Structure formats: structure tokens, C-alpha cells
Image (cartoon, helix red, strand yellow):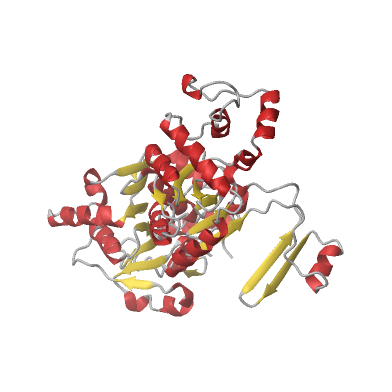
Length: 447
């Protein structure tokens, strides 16, 4: 299973806004595009049960089991007793490996939220009116719009919010009087757009107007394709091609590093088993594909590609060019096959940093300099720059860094991702390989 944490976005709205219908259509559209989608539904009622009373699993639960798993071929469900209510972030964290998780509800989770407002729903129409008025007044997104909405109704509090830089607060007596006079506004309390609102789905002109003022996109209530485009572009996890650079003959090792025995198995097997859980595509660059053909039978489920050098030159930069050229995904993680402590967690951290910063490359850096062969590259940003450097006769890997946006990944972040360290230790000689094998054995990693 892919170990990448799943990005998530929440669809929120008032009762009868059409959240579930929108989410159903959105999930179907994203799946049609090839995305792996998870979903979370916030249920406001205590004690719901998804099991059927009288069935064996139901009887297990009612006998006192704190957790019951119901499993059959191709499907599994878990019902578990928890203390209180789990945070949405904890639920999403327990669902790694999805391209995106679509959450229904959890307005206060801190997730980016997409607000739905439907003209056919009276509460939505009132919310859109208050939302638009607040936008026109220049109130920041995330202001207490409910107070603003109440005070814009005649005689609600006897003040003009335009005269106040922040929303005037009502006294307890004014709150009670407002609730008595305007029960129709109760449904929007605590259900207004917030600072986490990133988009609006609506057929109400006032809501679209407000979104425009705030600089966030607004989508038609039935324009699921455009909403899916936005989620794909903004939130969905970019797929990662992971390239293990195995090269070929190593003069100092005296034989191919890929097939040299390590902990009783070919070294390349260790790298594959460590790194494949974070790979959407696994590529091995090698000049001895016939000697590595056994990997197809060893790992048939991984669909490993064995790729020879794209240019007839040896060197770090030609190897990187081959990796970028062979990859099909937007992010390309490149790891040398002799880095026996290569870290899948570091690959994940680098990919998340690339998404966060928009960089073309995220490259670890320490007192020895850059570590370009445990780094991640944006294919479309780096491939032209690497090709240009090759055409100029360059062979060093980092020579093209000045031509792209490089995010340096410092040692403290490396250790946060991989506390055990040692990610960049490599073996160039039999003695170095033996020393690394002893380190692995000390860590009780060798079976």
C-alpha cells in the first residue's frame, strides 16, 4: 500500500444544501479520471451502527467487543469503540495512500473547505445574502458573519455594522430577542464561510459575487467537471515515479552493485522493498537489463521498468536525464542503488515539500553539500534544464541547479523525516558494503 499521507478537502454546507449529492458526483468524476479517492462522512448523531442487528458481527459487538472487523474477499469494514469523537485530521491520517480524501462536513477541522449554497434551500439563500453583504463591507473571510447578519436586520441591535471595524457583539438579552424575532436565521448560526473556505459551489448570484470579492473560485451547482479540475489541480496528490539508479559495472566494487549480495540477497532487492511502498511507478536505470530481468518474476505486482541510458555517456547528469526522460509522473524521486538506508519517509517528506513550495527540485543538503541522488524533481521543470546542460557538455548532476527553482532540504528536516539517519551512506567497495551490512544487522533490520 502506498504510504503517502492523503491530502483532503471538505465539502460543507447547511442541512439540505445538497452536499451528499455533490460529493457523490464529484467522487465518480475523480474516479473516472483515474484517481484513488477516499471519503469521510461526519455523522452528528451519537451511536450510529452500520451493522445489521442479529447478524454474527453485530452479536460480537453487543457481547462487548471493543473492535470488530468484518471481512470478505475484496472488502472490509471495522467498527471500533472510541473515547469521545475523533478529530478529522486523525481520521484522514489513518487513510494513507489515497490521491485525495473528500470529506463531508467537519467545518471546524482546519481542512480547506468548499462551501455549497443552493438557491432552492432557504437557509443557503439567507447565508449567501449575509456572505455577500460582508464581502461588500470589506470584512475579512472568517469574520463572525453570523453577528454581522443579525445586526444588518432592522432593530436587531440598533447599530450599523458599517461604523465598526469588527463585528459588534450582541448581549445575551439581544441574542435571545434576535432568536425570538428571527427564528429563520438560526440555521446559519456557526455555518458560515470561514478563513478555511477555498471555493464556493452555488447557483446563487450573491454567493458568486462574494466569492469574486474574496478572490476564491465559484463553480456552478452542476459544473462537477470544473470542480474536479480544481481539486485535481489544487489538492490531489501528484503521482511519483521512483527511479533507482543501478547503472552497471562498478570498478571499485569489482562487480555490479545491483546484484552484489547484501544480507543474503541482491542489494537491489533491498532498495525495491524499502522504496516501492511510496512509488506510483518504479523504474530501475541499468545497463545490464538482462541481469536484472529476474526482478520481474520476483516482484510481478510492481511492474518494474528496466531502462537503459538515454545517451551514450556515463556520468551523474546523463543518469539523471535518463531518469527524468523515462518517468511518466510529474514528480520523480531519484535514489542511488547503493544507498542501503534509503528512506521512504524522506521521499514522502520531499514530495510534500515540493507541493508546499512549488519548487522544481527538493534536494537534501548537509555539510558535504547537496545529495542529488536521494532527491525529488519536478519532471517538466527539470528535464529541459538537464537536457540543456548535457548539450553544453556538462556531466555533474547539480550543475543545472542554477537554472531551476531548487528548495534546499536541510539536515534538521531530513532527521525529522528519518530520525535514524544514515540515508545518504553508500557503498563503493566491498569493505564499505560489509560495514553497512554490520550497521543493518545492529539495527535488527536484516532477516
